[in-house]
Image (cartoon, rainbow, N blue to C red; front, side):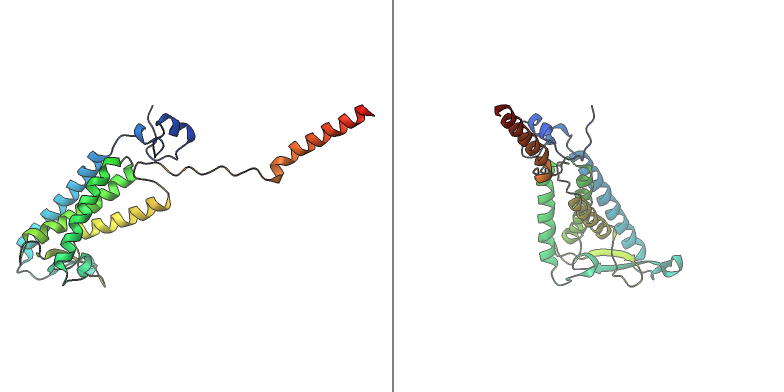
Length: 217
């Protein structure tokens, strides 16, 4: 029988799992294929779009679309997403490598569809920009990222930046819902019985004592 990939863990599921740290996780399939598939799509879309922009827009004025709501242009960014920290190219390259390594290590326990998509978007976006930093001018691991999407009152960005932002939104939503990488949720403790729950038992005990006293008389 199919198992809901993101359901709260139960004591029975914890027992069936053999006392593992995350209840019910062994019963869910790993989502490594989904992670790699989505990441590969993001990387391909980012690399192809940048190659087309560099080839067609190098000596072309910006193209305004949708009445100026969207502008296609070509800029080169030595910083992070949305042109942040342009003088720290090497630092952002190292951070991107660290993010990619962490995601690949975390994939061993990845059983949540939501987390698989979120990490795939982050992995694809980080890898897409890292490719620019490694292979583009002015030097290896110091290359400038190609940005080409411009919106009103917003820094120029690319598909990799968009993917990273979408990943951030998904991570926040998953964290708020309490969903772990393996698709389980923390088991909520049952509330301890208060005075209202003990009242019937106390009344029954008092009744038995009164009956016993009446029999002795």
